[in-house]
Amino acid sequence: MYKAFFFTLSKWIFFGAIIGLMIGSTTAFLLNMNDYLGEVREQNSWLIYCLPLGGMVLGYIYMNYGTSAGQNLYKGNNLVIEGVHGKNKILRRLGPLVYLGTFITSYLVDRQAEKVPPFKWEEVSLKL
Image (cartoon, rainbow, N blue to C red; front, side, top):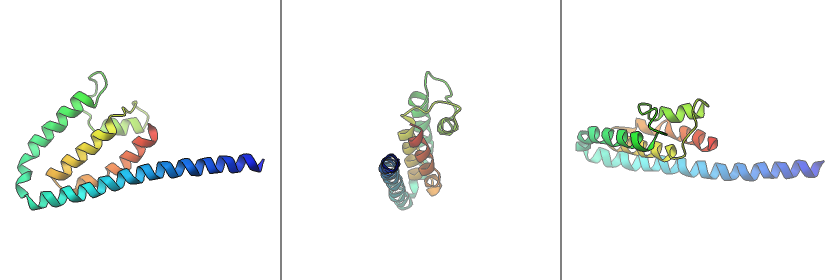
């Protein structure tokens, strides 16, 4: 009886450590990259004028790669949120798209983009 318990416990600890390492690494990468991009943006204030171009690029990417069969074109990151809540299936390619959108936003606008996506990424990763 204890043998099965300790085997199951060790299995959960092992897989929990693996998942924690993966999610922690991706979150650290996101936050460090956002800090770097924010510093670059602050040194080059003219980048704010590229915001419309960044929005068009993100819209194009979500329209062509973020949806399945051309549905839900207008939802953007909400596709991920609905997937986490079980309303839609999460497409595996949405995780990197959320990262890319966060980087573009952080680079062109402000640091508000770095506050939510790590939590979204954790939820998306666990659902996949």
